[in-house]
Length: 74
Image 1: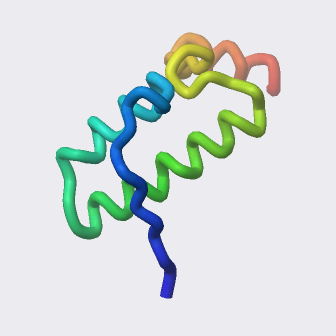
Image 2: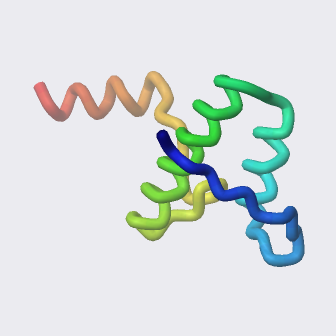
């Protein structure tokens, strides 16, 4: 059984990305909240490990960029 530690809400000590995550998660409850919270923890950990800002340093791949990348692989 996993244990979740709940910290008091302290917006003054939170980054913009953390505030966005808290605001996003506030809409959900139950298993959906649990899953999304897990996925966000994984995302934040990956961004931290790669020295990236979770909100600013990431760009979504578009169909043109993915097809250009696949042309280089072929």
